[in-house]
Image (cartoon, rainbow, N blue to C red; front, side, top):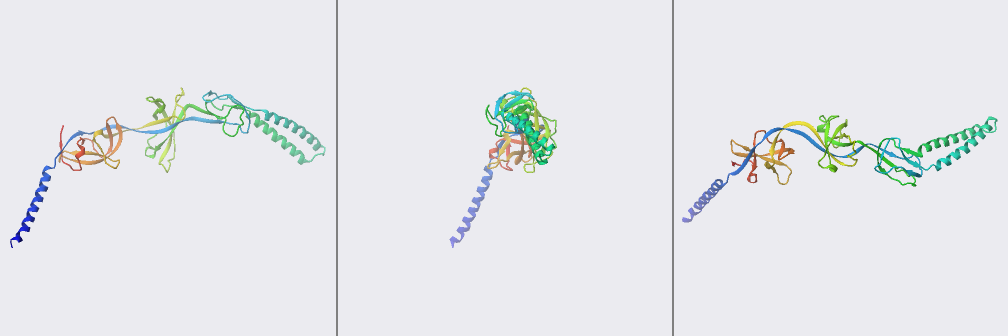
Length: 336
């Protein structure tokens, strides 16, 4: 009968033991020491940077309209040319042969014309001879204009695809590009459509000229938005009197959309969530001495601070040291 009382006594002792452990764990749970910084709202320039490749303002391919042997190319890649300058002399031997054929056809046409007047040739024979002569003369006029090729504009030669003596085969003989001014075309998010204006100045940097800044002006804003990318093309023109900026260079174009008041937080206050790209900040509540784990939307990085678009308010205090042991609602002790 003694054993009837052993189990209840043991169970009661076990419950008491567990309770003591829970109370003890609460008692030894340490308060985390943290350092704080008070954040404030500042006027921040709203800028965006776009990448683009420099293009010539105008580009012209120099080609004849028929197949010729190239007698002489008078310019080379990199040469500056003026409008109206002779660039290519083509072989005129085909033109001379056609001239002989035309002379012979004129003799034949005159013979048939005289016969037609006296009834010795039909109207069809007369018309056929006249048509052949007209076609030959038309070909001659076209060929005579194409034996010499002139620059249609001032610019620089950026491509030469043949040597003297080659037969023209369809690829342009030369390419001329106008390099003052030059331009870049960038794709801008539709969110900025109402903010970007024709005539607006922009800042430009080039990888080829590290540390040097250039200025451009927005000259064209597309009236339509691409439904696939939700962007629209914007053309920026760069004055280039010294020919420093060349087509093909990689450019970064920075556009200022005005200023807005946003909170700035120190770099060290940001916490990156493991396994995700989200950023958080621990915000201190002085009434409860606890912290909240706030997800933030980042803007620009300015010096040693980040612009915060949402998640932290002006005048709040954020944790800048001690975040490793923190969690939502954790009680903290503020130290200097």
